[in-house]
Each structure stands twice: as C-alpha cells, then as structure tokens.
Length: 476
Image 1 (cartoon, helix red, strand yellow):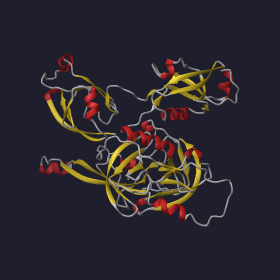
Image 2: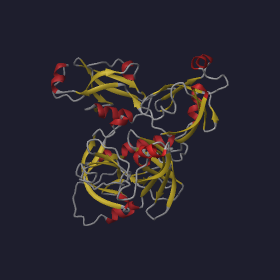
Image 3: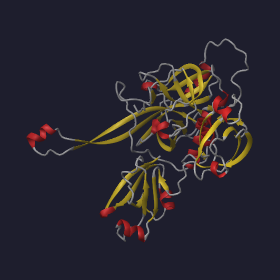
Image 4: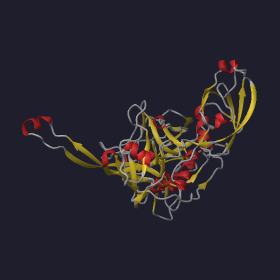
C-alpha cells in the first residue's frame, strides 16, 4: 500500500501485506496522453430534499446504477534495488560483488467514470509514479489506462481508457451538501471487490494539514461511511446517487476505519480535472499575501469591532499582485468578491481555483477605514525558465561554456538552478547540459518545455568533465 502518515492520518490505495497488494513506488510514470477538450459532464444541482422526511427501507435503486460508474485501478512499478553482499561472507570469500535485484510492486485503488469516452477521476496517490495502469470495470472488463495528468496539491488525478459507451457518474454541487446528509462510499477496499458503505456527512471544509508536505489545498468532506485501503479514488455519493466527493484518506490510529473518512469535494476536483484534461497541468491564481485570522483583541486594536471576521495581512510578497495594488501589513481583508473571508486557508483555496489574469475585488480595512481594491491575479509558482519542478534552465552561451568548461561541440540548455528538494536534482544538477529530450535536440527553454510530456521522459544529459548519460525523469 502507498500511504503517508501525519498524526495517524492515512492516504492510501492498497497494501502488499496480508492482502498481497502493494502501493506504487516513486520515480516512474505511466503512459501519458496530450491535452484534449474537457468532456461534457452530467450534472444535477437540484436540492437533495424538499425538507420533508419519509420512511426509506432501501437505497438499492439509488446504489445499483452507480456501481457501474466506479472502477478499480491497478498500478504497477518496476523497482530496481542493489543488494550488498554480507560483510561476513566477504571476510571469508573475498570481494563478492553487489547484486542487482528487480521486483514488481503493485497498488490497488478506485476511480470514477466521468465521461462515456473513458475519462476517469481518481486520487493522485493511487496512480503516482506508476509504470503501468490497468482499469477494471464493474462488468469485469479490463483496459490499459494512460495518464492524463495529476495534481499532488489536491491529491486529484485523471486517467483515460480507450472505451466508449460507458456509464458516467452524475455530479452534484458539493457546496450545497449539509452536515447530516446521508452519503455512500463506493470503491474496492482491500481488493475484496466493489463495496458500498453508508454514513452521513460528519463535517465540511476540513483542513487537517495532510497535504502540507506539498503545500496542498484542503477542503475535505468528512464522513463516517466506512473507507478502507483500496477505497481511495472511489466515489462519495449523496442519497440521489450523485457524486459529491472523491474518497481520499482516513484518520485512524490503526490504519483501519474508525469512522473518520475524508473526501475531496467534487467542486474542487472538477476544477482541477478540467485544467488537467485541457492543458495537462493545473493553473492557479496567485495573490501573494501571508495572513492570519483576526482575533477580537487584534480587531479592536486596528479600529474594528471585536466581532469582525477576516484575516489580517502579515506581509505581501515582493512584486506580487497584492503588493502592486498597495496591500500592506496590518490591512484586514474582510471580503473577496463580496464573500466573507474567515481564514487564510479559505482565501488561498478560493484564489487557487481562479484563473491567472482574473480580476478580483477585495474589501479591506486599513486603520479602521474601509476601502476596496481590484487585483489582477498572477500565475501561482510561475517561473519562466522552470521546465520541471525545481529545475530551471538557460541558454548555453559561449561565456557559460568557458566558465563551466563545456565542450564547444555540445549543444543544449544548461541547468541554472536545481532545488535540493526537487526529485530531479540528482539527475539534473546545476551546470548539467540537457542535449536531447525524447530524441528531440534542445536549444532553448521553449523547445525543452515543448519536448517534455506528462509521464516518463528520456533525456540525454552532458555533465561536467565530459561525461554524458541517458536519464529517465517523470514529469508530474
């Protein structure tokens, strides 16, 4: 099983242990497909009920059709290990060489069919780093799947199978769910087969910092419907059988279900999915403020009523949209486009779902005086020369050649920055020259970006001291 642990919080697909399953390992990528037009989704935003309660003896008519819309996703990854000989054996038998060992790791999760032509919504951690993906439909048919795109910051991914006439799920408006609404979790827990469990919405807008290691965005639906290993990527449905969330994680001291399950709301998931399908990546708006919720005592000190809700700015990032319009420390942001703002996480999540270039209106209080500013959002994390996360490149000029001692016959782009936390830093250190990507000669940042695709890429890299090598990197 692939999972991450933060204070007994588990993100998982399935596990190789007593159940004979394993999670996908790091460092590889399934086949990818180019950007496409977002498919038309089935939607039903009518209220769940008219406020009148009636005796319900079965939900079979609701659940049975939806079972065809949920799939199992199997991932596989080839892992190479170098096994060192026992030092005791070397003492008696001399220099015994290390042995290379190759093994195949398997992972199992779930997914939801969102279009008749084979687009499937799932979790990023279900398909992350997989070499191969296989989707099994409810009727037993199996299809190889290709990666459309993934977003670790929301734990959402999209894959596609070559099939038509599939039964697609109907989407609800997850903003309209209420605590106490009946919900169903559908998936393939522990590999036992498609399973439906029932519960209620226990809470909304949960942010428990499970995605902090990737600076993620959390707005989870909490439910007590049983979610176990293998349920990840499956459907959380309302009482009409409409999709309201993608099951993602549990909070548990034992890795088993104790009634605290978490699902990504479909409103957030669809926003990410649309961007992944149409561009292969996720474009997010960026405001550039650091802020904290305002307390009653602080509100009083900055000229506001003690009951004021909002966030008080600690800083505005240099050259950010916020700084450009004059937002500064001690400003209190009260509303975004007329909607009250109560936390920095809420503000950041809302901004992230807006397109770069969007104009937003902020109602602000400065020293107790109200004001409104219009801000044009930038692209989050935009680095013009970044071709892979944490890796920036530049033109290989004659001056750079002389300074780094690079042979005049070598052409390509030179790595100018490599974040030590980047997964690519070891293969692409500062000073390395990327000569080819997927067999295409590279001579500029633009050509490098164009040659890279989501999934695995083969790079020819020239290192200092005249050494060249082929390396495989996975673009997320």
